Length: 482
Ligand code: GLU
Image: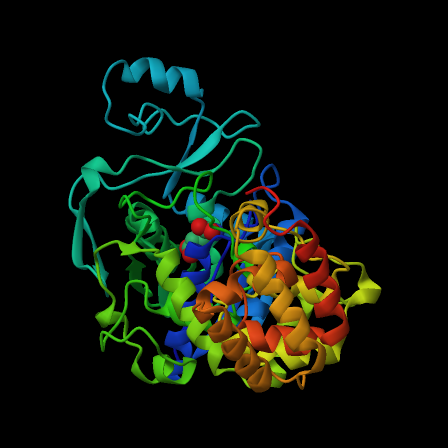
């Protein structure tokens, strides 16, 4: 039998990394089993859905390379089927009308913390009307058993599952019901989703079985797999407020989709204990039964390191292309939200970036770090790190003689990294100063910072004239605050 899985996000907010992990595990499962992966946007909660979040879901999935085989479908296209399913269940006695208000339910509960409805209307034969909700008659006793592929057998006492609402008085069909109707229509064989849905699963199984009986359409229950929670360094559930959780924010920071997918894939599943795995390798190995139960640490430092490794593996052309949105955004193309290119557009030169790119590629972990590494090449004057400037230019008694020597050597030296390195060693020796000491004021004078790409490559790319101009500006103030 062909496996059919779905990713069923609700467009109620940013596309969260937890959702992306669910999407990925569904996709891996479908690819591994030769099955079908479908995308269903669960957009029936009109109060909370926004169309722009639908676009974000679709764009994020495309960025991650998780193309659905079917869909995107809209749950809202199926409202007639949802309503028909509600009627079928009502006609067969699985539902009853309930006239209780939220306050009434609450006041009868008093201090009893047990969640749920007390069944007040269950035997009252309340007529259906514009103020009545419809509740599912959960059997009083017995067990509902969920055979979870990750957690094994989970037993729910029916006595503690309350008679939940499937349709509101407005007629709106609620999540548990709509989700099951759609999963049946889509012939879903495996429901793979976050563990926050475990408590819904017994209710959904009850609905599923009731629908099979009421409609005569006997469809086998899907297999369920609930994926472990994602937690932060404090082992707390990732917080939408405190943690960077939207997939788009990672793209905007300059993570590569391949690195991000690799990282997500190993959140709660790592059959070989490896940290690096291609999509192909993950597809080949993926088994729901290998997913862990324990929470998975969403370790941004680990992701950042992994991304650096992926960046270093790119060809030079691919690295340049990946960096361009941060350096010279093209109109109409995607550009990182919130990122301001630090130089006027006409100052960026592709061939200059190409010349420095190989050494930048070795040194950045995320693409948003690239502009600060190369800004000295594209700004008229490099933005100055005041503390570094004070330490090695204005505040160092040796700075003047170092800069003098540099200017006179660089005046005539061939302007290539190797030769620049050579002459700098030579004049350093003549000054009886170590190379590190000599490089410091030169670097700060030319690039504005004490860290960045290797100095001699930087000088060579910037060119003699501009290097001499910047050295001379620094020379004018060297040692003056000492
Ligand atoms: N729309 C639900 C959600 O976003 C779907 C859950 C499910 O996969 O069943 O949480």
